Image (cartoon, rainbow, N blue to C red; front, side, top):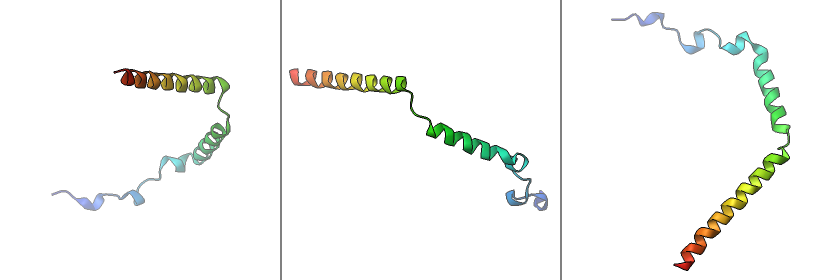
Length: 69
Protein backbone atom coordinates (compact mmCIF):
# COMPACT_ATOMS: atom_id res chain seq x y z
CA UNK A 1 0.00 0.00 0.00
CA UNK A 2 1.03 3.59 -0.52
CA UNK A 3 1.16 6.17 2.22
CA UNK A 4 -1.34 8.89 1.29
CA UNK A 5 -0.71 10.91 4.45
CA UNK A 6 2.13 12.77 2.72
CA UNK A 7 -0.02 14.02 -0.17
CA UNK A 8 -0.48 17.76 -0.20
CA UNK A 9 -3.66 19.36 -1.47
CA UNK A 10 -3.48 22.27 -3.85
CA UNK A 11 -4.61 24.74 -1.19
CA UNK A 12 -1.82 23.61 1.13
CA UNK A 13 0.83 23.44 -1.59
CA UNK A 14 3.31 25.99 -2.76
CA UNK A 15 1.92 29.31 -3.91
CA UNK A 16 1.47 29.85 -7.63
CA UNK A 17 3.93 31.75 -9.78
CA UNK A 18 1.91 34.95 -9.25
CA UNK A 19 3.09 34.93 -5.65
CA UNK A 20 6.69 35.14 -6.87
CA UNK A 21 5.97 37.81 -9.49
CA UNK A 22 3.17 39.97 -8.09
CA UNK A 23 3.56 42.69 -10.72
CA UNK A 24 3.30 40.37 -13.72
CA UNK A 25 -0.47 40.01 -13.66
CA UNK A 26 -0.92 43.77 -13.28
CA UNK A 27 1.46 44.45 -16.18
CA UNK A 28 -0.29 41.91 -18.40
CA UNK A 29 -3.68 43.39 -17.54
CA UNK A 30 -2.40 46.90 -18.35
CA UNK A 31 -0.90 45.75 -21.66
CA UNK A 32 -4.09 43.92 -22.64
CA UNK A 33 -6.13 47.03 -21.85
CA UNK A 34 -3.86 49.18 -24.03
CA UNK A 35 -4.23 46.73 -26.92
CA UNK A 36 -8.02 46.81 -26.56
CA UNK A 37 -7.99 50.61 -26.74
CA UNK A 38 -5.92 50.73 -29.93
CA UNK A 39 -7.84 51.45 -33.08
CA UNK A 40 -7.98 48.98 -35.93
CA UNK A 41 -5.49 50.02 -38.63
CA UNK A 42 -7.14 51.44 -41.77
CA UNK A 43 -5.28 48.95 -43.98
CA UNK A 44 -6.76 46.06 -42.02
CA UNK A 45 -10.26 47.51 -42.32
CA UNK A 46 -9.76 47.86 -46.08
CA UNK A 47 -8.65 44.24 -46.34
CA UNK A 48 -11.71 43.11 -44.39
CA UNK A 49 -13.97 45.11 -46.71
CA UNK A 50 -12.33 43.53 -49.77
CA UNK A 51 -12.83 40.10 -48.26
CA UNK A 52 -16.51 40.83 -47.60
CA UNK A 53 -16.95 42.01 -51.20
CA UNK A 54 -15.24 38.89 -52.57
CA UNK A 55 -17.43 36.65 -50.43
CA UNK A 56 -20.59 38.47 -51.57
CA UNK A 57 -19.55 38.15 -55.22
CA UNK A 58 -18.79 34.47 -54.78
CA UNK A 59 -22.18 33.92 -53.14
CA UNK A 60 -23.92 35.83 -55.94
CA UNK A 61 -22.06 33.74 -58.52
CA UNK A 62 -23.22 30.54 -56.85
CA UNK A 63 -26.80 31.77 -56.74
CA UNK A 64 -26.69 32.87 -60.40
CA UNK A 65 -25.42 29.44 -61.45
CA UNK A 66 -28.22 27.76 -59.51
CA UNK A 67 -30.86 29.97 -61.16
CA UNK A 68 -29.42 29.24 -64.62
CA UNK A 69 -29.91 25.50 -64.17
